[in-house]
Length: 326
Image (cartoon, rainbow, N blue to C red):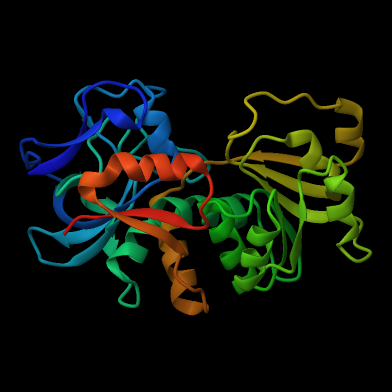
């Protein structure tokens, strides 16, 4: 098969389309002939060597295609070996593309519980863009964050896949959504997806400005932070509010004032990815609510994975970046 092989860690230039053996069949696993694969920031970290992936390696957590044994159109759950405890993943858990070869290829092998029927209303590109970001956001908002209709939600970083999906899912269930961004244009795009409005995080006083937009509620019930700005996120919460953390794109460490935290009765909740039960919940929500497909910004052919990574890292797009394969 043809695959984008990673022979060494480094910048996007290390990604090259090459020939490599087909996946080896194994009991309990299935092979999927991929039609599309979507990029995630996680792929960049794998490419840089952050997860110690074996070389040569194939990146990619997200994909959609056709099961080679049944001919069924499927999407791939990229959360491998989660285990039976929904509160946290088990010791053998990993994300597809960490150590198991991923979806930047014509074929990929995954456990049988990691495929689900492709929603018929989605194109291959939109189906490939859904799993990782959809699963991650569903768990963050509902399983961990306990978001309910009528609550005020603040989503940090409009424009990225997580933020875009969060706006869509939260608005679909009746939450009021506000976003942050460095761009008025991205705030405007978030409004078209269901956000009430947004604030520019380039203003140091953005937490106060965001909190004041809650119309007498005293702040947000829930803040979704995928960037790592905990102190500012807490400042935007109402007393008793919940901060859900699922990323660290702008900060690896955080310093908090402890007394205001416990006097404010805040909750600090960590989350990542999700279980097969979360994936079932996501697909049920999409089936029962009016949720538009994940926005796809740009589609590259498989042999242009290098350029796709360069585009992703530039951070200028709104929505997902996808590789077209078959």
